[in-house]
Image (cartoon, rainbow, N blue to C red):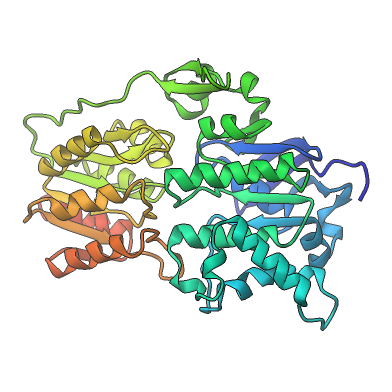
Amino acid sequence: MNDAPVLRTVDLEVNYGIRRALAGVSTTVRSGEFVALAGPNGSGKTTLLRAALGLVPSSGGSVELFGDRVATLSVRERARRVAWMPQAEVPRDDVPLLDYVLYGRYARLGRLEGEGASDRVAARAALDEVHLGDRAQDGILSLSGGERQRAVLARALVQSTPLLLLDEPTSHLDIGHQLDLLERVRGLVRGGRTTVVAALHDLNLAARFADRIVVLHRGRVVADGPPSRVLSPRLLQEVWGVASELRRDPRTGLPYLLPRTLPAALELPESTSRRRVHVVAGGGTAAELLRGLADTGCAVSVGALPLFDSDLEVAEELQILAAVEVPFSPISDATRAELRRLLGESECVVVAPFPVGSGNLANWEELARHPRPQEIVLIAHDPDRPWDFVDGRADAIRRALIAGGAVEVADATAAVRRAVGPATAIAP
């Protein structure tokens, strides 16, 4: 198109009502880069990607694609320059997978023009690239959560754009597929097929695959540079509140951060008149719930949660006991044992409406195995947002719990009222 940066923001500001999501963000992405956006949940990663697509209006500053302000480009022109893989998407119709991927070709077609043989060849090639070529005629709704995530990537790839934006592309994938997907994306960059900007929750993953890491915190850029310069114990402490040490992979020389300690020995007070409530959550779904329970004076615990999870940040702020796991890994046997102990010491368990993947399914499994009659309160999921990315296993456990006497409530406020019991007064 021209020699201008692929993507550039200058003093970009985005507000959601009175909340400022981005504050003076300036960054430049050059052709052939793989840039990772890192930061805690709520730091502005998704908002920055959506602003680059023109999906959210800016309150100040500017966003440019290949030298042109995004606001001046038509939707079709944007789709020819940038492909988008959202964090979660709910297909409405059970169309064949090949047709679903073909949607990505529409920006390449003329008005009233249907797709041709070359478009179908491109769609099949994209499916092969994400290991779904043998599912081309299956309905999109028949795919598991992880397979659907790869299908969304195939649809983005078939757009054949010079810029690819990915919002948490590894969400709901198991470890093998996470590494495989990012290796494939990295290969696209190395092969000169596209430039990539990806929001990644895990700093160590970002360091492994990205050329640069841009770290956002509370809507501002706090670090920007190659992994060797950006990753540091000080950054992890200041942004995520986690003590760590810096190490290097002896095979690649790449840096990675290792948390110094995990709170493995958590103790509830031996004697307390407060009701003991354990919360099962993740992904920022329990902030209101944790604050509400803490305000009532309950003895609260939470977990299992990975480091860097925003629910863990709230728990640490409120000094709530937490069963913690190393990020980007399945819940270990030791953490499962800690979770069982906390469940056993609780009088009530509240389950937030968190998305379930292979990494955190153990939370539901341990809850299902735990002897009752302790009270279980389930907060209802948004019916328009998918949450079970493990082929229905979590939903099956949820339905079994309800059949066994668990109570479902509409929201965090109702859950707090139910959890604290009649002995604890809550101000109206």
